[in-house]
Each structure stands twice: as C-alpha cells, then as structure tokens.
Image (cartoon, rainbow, N blue to C red):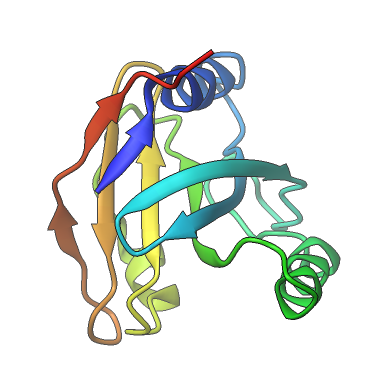
Length: 132
C-alpha cells in the first residue's frame, strides 16, 4: 500500500494539533494506494476517548462514489494516548469488510485492515513523494 508522504505528514500534524480529542476522517483511493483523506467531524459523545465519523459526511462520500467519485477505502482516526494500535473500542467497530484503518498519533501512523469482524491485520505501507 502506498500513501503520499505529504498526506501522511498532514495527518500526523492534525493529530499533534489535537492532543485531547480524537480526529477522524475518510480515506479515498484504490486497492494499492491511499490518494486523499477528508477530515470529518468527530461526533462521538466522548471525543477524548472515541471517534465517530459524522454520518452525513460518510453518506455524502458514498453518494459521490456512485457519481464517479474516488472510492472510500477506509478511514483514519487518532489516539491521543500516543499508541497507534487498535483499541478494544476499535475492535467493536471493525466490520470485517476489508476497510483500512489508519491510526495516527502525534508521531506515528500505523495502517490496519479489518478482514474479519472485530479483528485487525497490520498492513505495510510506503510513504511516497507525490509529483508537483
């Protein structure tokens, strides 16, 4: 899996700028590349410990795909605790639908995929320079 180094740096920076609240958003791309990310409001009741992507943003993204937009391949969120591993709460939300989960902290990003409900598999990725 590839991800733009600029995009990755932006997500790490976003996480660093939000040390007490989980950030979250959608990932768009193909089976082998994360092309873009879209920040979304975190509407979780306790955004300091959990994330929930605004359903309106999620529905809008899926509607855009039906009209030729880039595929939604997963989402990202941060862990203000500084650990980029899936939490028990993350496992509760893992559908087993092959979606990508990019978990970021102020200094690290790890990519996961949910192949079975409640479970994660680590996914290797490379940060690549994007042409100007």
